[in-house]
Image (cartoon, rainbow, N blue to C red; front, side, top):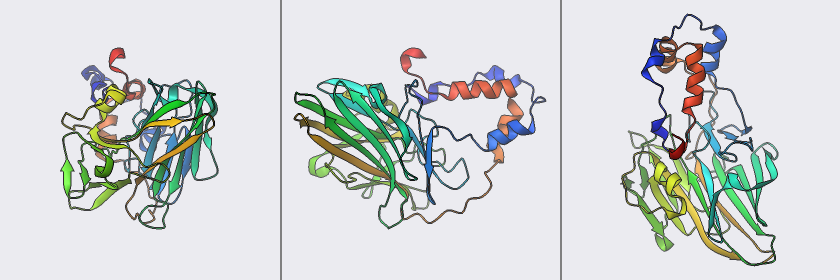
Length: 312
């Protein structure tokens, strides 16, 4: 899978703009809310709830500001997700059998339950506190239960695709060091926190590696494409062009009836309540309007969806 490979052809730029209507312009300004969606004063979470899609269970996180450019993760499904390894069989969370379809659980969380041949995994995405008492963090939690009569060996990898205001190459910062080449951390070297800064040295977003429960066994500052394509065979060795992190819990041996809870957090650093305002219409929307017609808009929606390398 390659985010940058799906671009519209130059020929689409020739399509007339005369057929645009006010409704289309409004749609460009305010993207439709789809999937299972919850929000609070600080964050807006959308989780893919279409079980027929390969990105089922993956999510998008934004600031709850009314501005579609206030992203905290890549603004398409498929990019922030979980990988599962059960007894050496590697799958995405979406590739299990649906026990409970992704759904809102109250006003502040979305829950989905998948089964992998008797190993049941609950994904719970919920608003939580971080370095303050404000619920400006997303807690990403996996509860693994062995419902078989045999021992199972389970590994979980949570991949977060931080994309701040549409920018995907902000370096991951740990301590005082910026990581622009892939780096893996294990054992006592696993950082407690990781950050993304703005050009003035202010913190734009951050993560807490352990959200409670089982401590993680590895943390990777990595290129998103490598994490997606290599799965659990990932080895840190390349430059980071599209930043991502992976928090992993490895080789948890569960006896029949046992369970383990794995969680991490990502969100705003002591975020203040955001006052919602009108969405930006700015240069990006105007350029799209100037270049494409209604047919082009439909094509853009199709081509923006990420595809695996073999389908490109």
